[in-house]
Length: 70
Image (cartoon, rainbow, N blue to C red; front, side, top):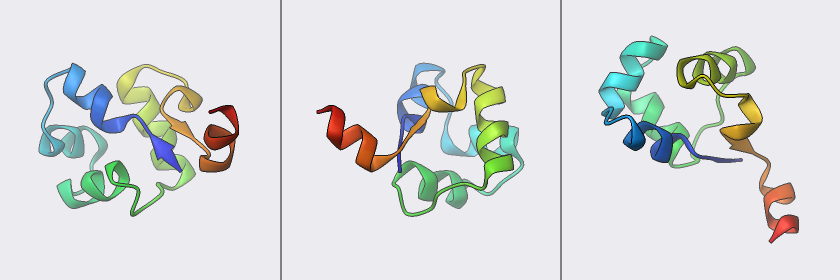
């Protein structure tokens, strides 16, 4: 699954630790999500969307769908 977490975080000048605090997860979890090593649970994905004030689909996309669109 692809995501725009790093870009969205950078636009707000938040560190991984800043975002982790807002989500109540570890900085390592934020890093793992950003690098695609971990897909967040659905509740965490909703929490991420709420923190950024965006719909989930504006943050996360399925790799197969993203590749088909290219």
